[in-house]
Length: 197
Ligand code: ITT
Image 1 (cartoon, protein in one colour):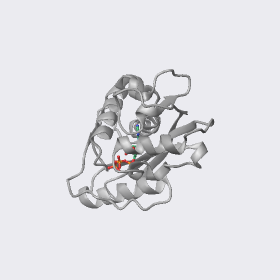
Image 2 (cartoon, helix red, strand yellow):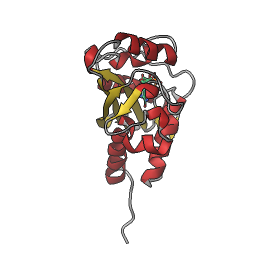
Image 3 (cartoon, helix red, strand yellow):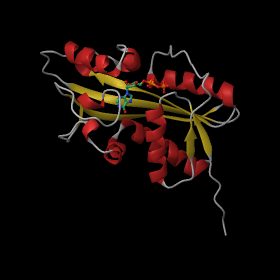
């Protein structure tokens, strides 16, 4: 089964395909055409994932999965949240801004959230789910793997940042893998036809 991932983030599609391959069902995610440029003006991750899914459906009219994700920091009242991708011009500057805003703050609690929406070829929402990964923000970036805010995020009960974990290790615990497993489970149970002998 081919599903268009309503995204232009190559890291996301790579991560999602790795998680799906591990799950053991025949689903492959592909990126939409280059002119995919949704206006993410929703107020929640869930609303934005729906907006992305609808825009991709208009282009492809096939199965669509959209992921809207971000980092929510308690001491910053949930910021950067839905603005995570736009918090500054580059990933490095976004990290710098977060660390500056948290300068001197003892409460470092945060979580990554990922809302996913699955739309069917008729354009109706089949399923949606939000996954989370809880942790804390450290004071200096560490590690080179992953993307975005991974170098400053220490998952709960870990001593390494996500950027210091292998892809496999990230995929065991990430907000994206929590949401995607739920979606894959739905697909397996409801959409893949199994032959009865
Ligand atoms: P698309 O909208 O095209 O999918 P995007 O990168 O703009 O790509 P989002 O709108 O969902 O995606 O914004 C998510 C931002 O949140 C992303 O750019 C990162 O800065 C951050 N983020 C999300 N998931 C992350 C992860 O697994 N690790 C680190 N940062 C993440």
